[in-house]
Image 1 (cartoon, helix red, strand yellow):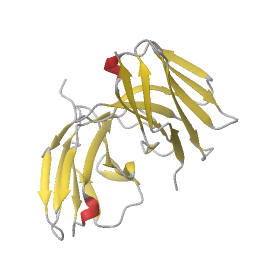
Image 2: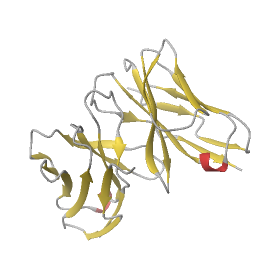
Image 3: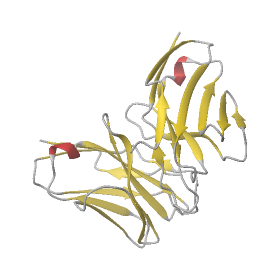
Image 4: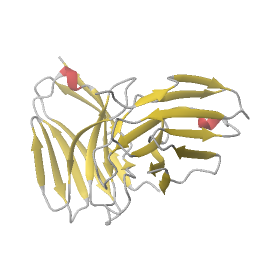
Length: 113
Length: 113
C-alpha cells in the first residue's frame, strides 16, 4: 500500500514568489491535513480538508491556502513568499473520523531566499 | 500560545535504560493524546495514543502514563535501543475538531550503545 506522497521533495523560491505543494493521500483516505515544521516554532497545524471542504484552519495568514480535489488529492499554496516561510511542509491523511491515526508524508522542504 | 509543553528538549540515555518524556497541556477540552516519532528526513509516525478515560497504555516497550487532574502525560520507553534515537513529539486534539493536532515542542532522544 503506497504511503502519503508529497511533491516536490525540495523547493527553492525567492521572496515575493508563490508556491504550490501537492499531496496524494493513502487510497481510501478522505481527510488531508497540512502542517508546517520549523526549528523555532515546531509543528504547527495549517488546515484540514475533508471531502473537498476545509474542515479546520490554523492561525496562519491568508497567504496560506489549500484545496482538495474529488480524488482526495490536496494542494496548498503560499503566495507572496517571505523568508520566514522556509520550512518543512508536511501532509497527513486519514479516513476522516475525529482523532484518527494520521499518516504523514515525508514532506516538502521549502527554502525561501 | 503554547498549549502543549514538552520536556526535556533533548535526552541522552544508555542502551537498555528508560527514556522518559513529559508533556503538560492547558486546554481541558483535549481528549486525545498521541505520541509521534520522527526520524531525520521523514514525517512523524504515530507511536501510541491515549484517551483521558485511561491512566496508562502500554504497547511493547512504549508506555503512556496519563494524569488528568494534573493535565500531564508522559512517554516511557523501556529498554531503550540505539534505533530509538529520534525526535519525539507529544500532541493533543479535541474530538470535535477533526484531526487538528496541537504538538509539543519535541524531544531529541539519543540512545548511546
